[in-house]
Length: 561
Image (cartoon, rainbow, N blue to C red):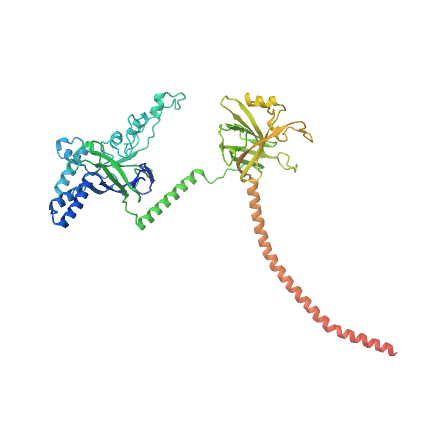
């Protein structure tokens, strides 16, 4: 915004679930130069002179009132609502000028409007989607965007597409059975096919910015606002609503270059609470029916692997690589399957990323690949008596660089063991590369390219073909390089999981039932035990003194004898 003007004249895209016919736009234009400034200056001068008693206001008041009515206008325009310009009023008043049914309808409307004397507009008018107003007239008369001298071929073709009506039905045509795909398209074929065939309705809000007494000239018509709407509820408005910003600056062409202010405001009425609730209920019903329809297409049967087979689905992404010596990196990778593992036939287990340039992130050169990959493997253990843990697939990868002269260099080797737990995992794998001793090898790497490579990339880990007890790398020189970041999402699918979960639920249910009965029985047994112990203690207390008395009496009698 400069000097109170709004300079952002780009288009804005809105998405509305409401019908576009409810759109209302309040348009207001105001002249800020020439007659408006002069009338304001004369009005102030006349007021000062009237205070002195020199001149009357009758003459100047009529002039300023006439100037104010033509220098400022406000109008609320609805979607595809027709407002006639002075040029159209003069043209369609004569019935002989009307050739098409639309023009004859305009003639009837103008005659009725002239009889009722209820014309609401003078300068602001509209062109609907049915009027003959082409895109090139819009660009030539636009005040906000400079005109293009030579439109492109695609723009010309789009100008023919954009006036299609929404209510038109597509014409049924026979699709040729042969040559559905053109493997070697010509330039003419590409030009004719590269068109977005989306039905769009367009409306223009115009302004007759000519002098006060010379309205109705075609060269004084300018585009104030362009509105486009398609069947998906997408509404494009150019320029956007002011939204408490400054006015748009309009400058006319010709000898008298005049400046106007343009204000655009959304004047659509808010939806009532009952209508909003009814609309939301309708959308919920629609989404529910669509969900039921999709469920009917998918079905209720869930695809299960055969018994004794584990299905592993890996959806991963090579996120980035960092810390390497050269630029323009790419990654070559493949998935190694151990014993008892298999994959889907004709499913590729290897891939190569795109060549990516690095950029500096926190003093580190990082290449962002965002390269997705997907594998589907199966595990089947043939020998059930073997109690050893299964080996998981390993993703081996190699990072290379490519320069301007098509020289490639090996930047590092690494591997990633597929996680054995399902879920989301983010892993950073560090890499190394073989190092050849001597200065000549480094000079060759810098000037010619190339580097020592591994014949078997699985050598970065213990190779699957190794059968010994110890793998010796004595004398093998390496150099630590950068790292590669992976994002892995693992899904494990097996029939045993469902059987185990079902059995676990059944066990919990049975244990809960047995636990309830056993708890009641144990409490009852404990209470009976307490009662028996209490009775025995009471009996012991009663019998213990008598025994002591009898034994004492026997001892006394024996001693006296």
